[in-house]
Amino acid sequence: MKEHAFRLVKGDDLKKSLEKYTEDNDIRAGVIISCVGCLYEAIIRDASGVNCVTLKEKLEIVSITGTLSIDGSHIHISVSDEELKTYGGHLKDGCLVNTTAEIVILELDSYVFERQMDEKTGYKELCISRKQLV
Image (cartoon, rainbow, N blue to C red):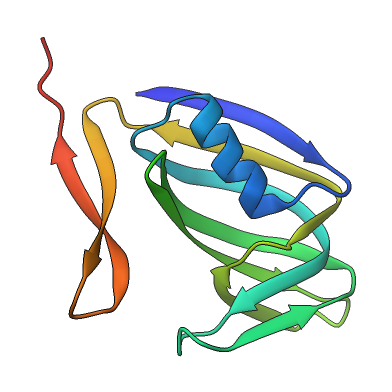
């Protein structure tokens, strides 16, 4: 296993930055183990898979979890507003970092994550395979 840690700054797009870091570092199977920070805009998709909510206010990142690979990502996020109301769902492009986002990713050297269309769900779903180590 290999650890990755980095920080995003004001104006960075959280999802795009995670995916770019994954690509730049050739991560074939990774999991987000920590993300602490805040956003000033968030776009989150609900469980219907159709509807998105856009929040344009100061938001704390309460939690983030997901799988990453050069073949695609699947990330969920929870954020809270100044009244401590919490919103959560599927992370979309357009979630913009306010002051910081401190991120730690764990790369799983023994696995490869790929995404393949699943006719039953209508989504590209995670396919996990084990690497042949030499």
